[in-house]
Length: 422
Image 1: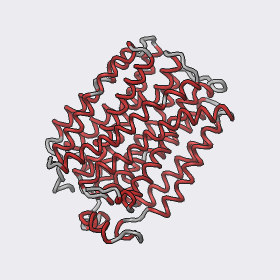
Image 2 (image 1 turned 45 degrees about the vertical axis):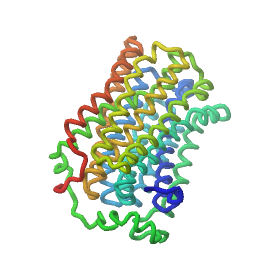
Image 3 (image 1 turned 90 degrees about the vertical axis):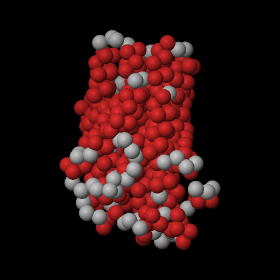
C-alpha cells in the first residue's frame, strides 16, 4: 500500500515529473484551439481546414506513437524521452513563425511527431519503476498531466493574447518544454542505477528489480500482432480517442461558434472540463488499485473500473439540448469518464505484456487512438461544413466508449501477464 510519506520517494517523484511533461504536451496541443480566433485575423482557417490541422497533428502523432514506442524500447526511457521533448518543444515554438496555412500545418505535423513518444515513454517508465499494485495509481498521476495542461491552456493563453501577439503563445509553451529536459536528465535513471534509491523503496519495487527488461530479447512488432489482446486494445483506443480528440480540439470552437463565446469567455470556462478530466485520471487509477487492495483480482479490478468509466459517457448526447451552464457540466462528466478510462487502458500493456514489449504495445495502442482522432475529426469537419450541426456529432461520440468496453471484454478475456511473447 502506498503511504503518504512514500509520495515523496524516488518513484513517486518520477511519476510527478512525467506528469508535468504530459501537462506541457497537452498545453502545447491546446494552443491552436484556444488561439485560433486570434490566428484567423492573420491566417484564414475554415472548419474543414481546422479539421485538417488537427488531423495533421494526429497523423504524425499516431505514426510516431508506434515509432516512438519502439524508439523508447531501443534507446531507453531516459535518453528517448529527452530527445522527443526537445523535438516537440521546438516544433511548438515554430508555430509562431507561421504566416500561411501550409506553414501552420507543417508545424502541427512536427508537433505530432514529437508528442507521439510521450505516453509510450510514460508507460515504459511505470513498468520500470512500479510494482503491479501501484501501476494504475502511478498512471493516474501521470495521466492527470493531461488535465493540468488542459486546465492551464485556456486562461493562460487568453492572458498571453491580452498582452502580446498570438505567436508568443507558442514561444512560451516551447520554452517550458526545453526547461523540463534539464530536470529530466538530472532525475531519471533506471532503479538499479539510481543514486537516491533507498533500502525501503528498493524493497517496495523488488519485483521490478528482479526482472530487468534490458536483458530480455527484442520482440518484433509483427509478432505482437499475433495477439488478440493487442488488436482489442488498439481498436478500443481507436474508438474512444475518436471521441476524446473531438472533445479536446473542438470544445473551444464549439463554444465560439454555437454558444457565442469570445476568447476571454472561453478562458473563463473551457478549463473546467479539463479539471474534471484530472479528477477522472486520479479516481480511475485509485479505484482500480483500491479494488486490488480489497482482494479483487487484477482482471476484475481493471474491468470494473473500465466499465464504470464507460457508463457515464452517453450523457454527452444531451449537450446541445442544455443551457450553457449544464453543457459545461456534461462536458466535465465526459472528460472525467474519458480520462478515467484512458488511465486504465494505457496501463493494460504493462499488466499483460513483458517489460521488453511494453513500449511497443503502448505505441501500437496509441497509434490506434490517434487514427481514431484523424478519422472522426475529418468526419466532423465535413459534417459541420455541410451544415449538419453538432447534435449528430455528439450522438456518435456518446456511444464509442460503451462499444470499446464491450470489445475489450471480448478480446481480453482475462487481464493477466502473458507467459509466451516472442
